[in-house]
Image (cartoon, rainbow, N blue to C red; front, side):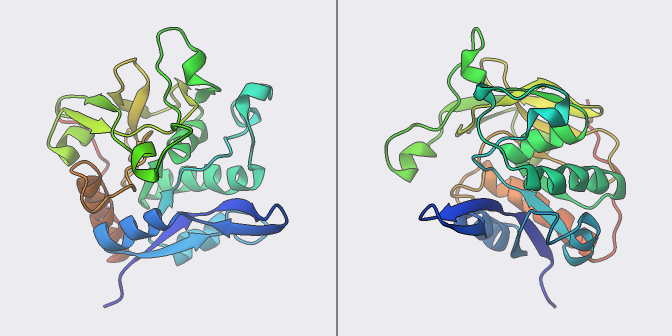
Length: 259
């Protein structure tokens, strides 16, 4: 029997500053294939080439990946500033309606970093353009130098809601994570439940209250060494279970906390 398909949201890049591409990090494909047990399929996130309806027909679930471009602030009613960085409006045009459609239908998705922010914006939330500029906040950005191992190293703990969805997935109320992001949640969107926080109060783990399917998203990068990391592995395993359930025709009840 064929494995179910997970659509991995691709990002736009220029090779040698000339050749346009859509690409996804190998570690995303590795986590989806080896830990979730699904076929990874990189999606060109551009409405000129694909539609949300087509993607939901072809794929059984979606991985909303991280990426250097940020969600454009117009998507949450704020003006563009230099602090907001660079953008990918084509990706915005695919992922934001895709999140809302999956929330409504129950089709599973897992959000990572930018994907975490996309989930919040799709549900009407807002973002801070630069977390490190806020009083009392740490620098959550990727270290500028060093090896990949050093850049993706565990850097802070995330405290989770007791008895919540993430507590059940991880089997712990506190986990250690990496951190490679500049932006973060300012105001949560409608039905966005924040269940994890960094020591400085930055939201790190969310899901959508009352959604009929898997809607988990995290601000860190669990795709790094997912097969061996004690936090990443159960997250991608739970995601894979939800995707297989959807592919087999099951339509699960909404995720809710127990306490």
